[in-house]
Image 1: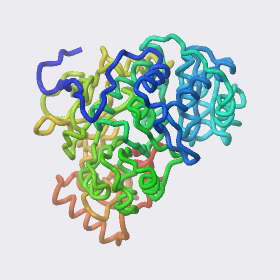
Image 2: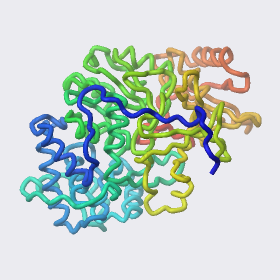
Image 3: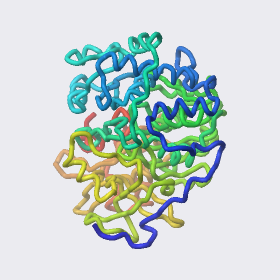
Length: 517
């Protein structure tokens, strides 16, 4: 591998300062669940709320007691240390109990999206070789060939079960495996260890938002998603704070209601969620929010401004991945540079490289990252693991360039690029310009074949308010002509009620290219 020269292509973040309250510094965790329980006891968090669900609130003490009992229940179902437990449930206390119970037992939790189709659930259960499935009642029949429990039954059994002892593990023992979003192909399960959550708590919980015991979190992104797992499970349990858990994907009005009812202070979402909120929600509902974070896709400068105006709070754009566990590059509460994804977080090093793997001193390059929370492997996929992990570095597939001052600007992904007249074009650059129009809520650009088979750029636009299609098309093309080179100007604009997205909110570029959804 080429050596990295001492230049700004390799940026090491400073050690996390002690900001925003008590830090999580202490002995390195062994068993993740036991470490959290001991910390809650030591810090006196037993009676503090940890999770707010539609039924009731649950304290830190109750959560850790349930996890200890759930470990006994899972062991009674034949689960042993190292076995995989597939979790297919909406967010709620049963999800938390299953995950922490698996951790305490020394098993490997495998959280998956409950809204997948039966074939996708069957694939994941087979792919990870699940010993047990814990699922919502409506899904349980999908796993009839496997041992399975409903979340409701797990909770019922845990209520009367004895506390199970914590398995003796090391920080490198597998803790959970989380599937990638599948935007570019078959999902792969990134395997993480018991030590990893503390690492990205220090980087993104402490280092980005300075999470405090009095914070209330709402993560629109769900727990099965790496982003949501950190936001709504890891950060609250490590900090003594609380999180609102909603079992389904909430509509904008539901988000606003939950924020107002619980006094949410930290809001996490993806750009499309913020776009919908800005179009539909009143600002008054968000008066309690002190910080918002955006991830999953690049946040355009225009949408960031609309979101800040809605929330009356800073919006921090960041970049993370399932393979790293959470964010590794971010703006922070103390240093926010809109239009960028910020700088490397404490504990992570970033290098921009070209297609040959050589460092890029100037201009655009692929982000390679290394840090202690980078996955151990893709579960059962050694060839794909070796392609992603190179000498301790993870190839992310994300493209970026440095801006003045050293922050990074996200430039899309390797597989997002379009070819126009033999010239490679980033659709993200065009989308950022079109998103500045006040009538645009969301936009995606792709090369589409016209009725004659000629391939031309087309912009698919979700309007943020009622707009005349012909007028909006003319205005957007005129805007693009003023701001972009001629070959980057879309030849047509098509209004759509929505864009094709994954369950985690990421744009399905391949579907946009087909023009049909």
